[in-house]
Length: 297
Image (cartoon, rainbow, N blue to C red; front, side):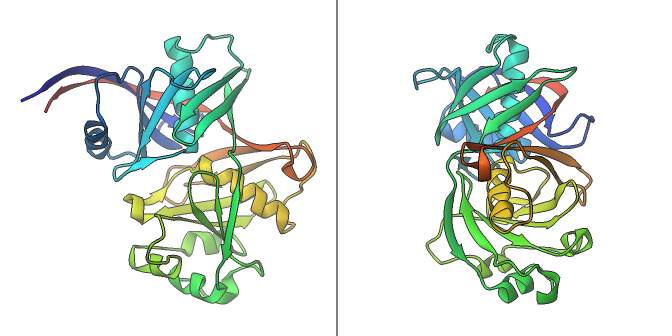
């Protein structure tokens, strides 16, 4: 039996100012000594949407190297882990309290983070470059989601990827979003046989911005309460189809997770006309718990 020692971790709720809402995240702020297999086992044990492990940065100019795991696999990039880990690193003093701009190293590369000061810090990440992919047949998407074709807006569902491959499906109202469902068998409508795992993001435009849900059964996440890595592409998709203003400085909110009892508010800031300077996704973080895991493997 290999005794790896004790590792302290923090649990935080991301994209909320309310305890036990938003998207839960476990953060191991000092993860030296953990290998890939052990980190994956820990993520599966904790069974949250994601668990992060912090190591010294290997890229110049980055404050830390952050490894992100779902219960099933490691991620190249994810939004709520980036924002939640940033909050923990600020509280731990790994990032100076006066640090308003810094970078976190993730598998996708250096991710810019900024802090908007206030009574509580609003933490923003800059969405990585968005890659566009194929469009999908609306009728097949509706059927896979347990909906009728008339429930969808007259906008073709599309694959977009900013580090987390996602198919976006626009529907008419909140009630349709809440009726949707998706399991592994339904994923066949969105997949080719050799394609990497996908998320499916369904949303309706609202006066505030969007009302959203995200399904990721291939990641062993039946539904995700808040998906920051898909929210930047969501903004790009909405701008392209005239569902939100693309004017420089536009800010809106995507409400996600409400149907599953984990209401999350994801803030979006459009930088430059049509987001030409970037799309930022931000949120508040609420600390929940601190614990220690003693590992003998």
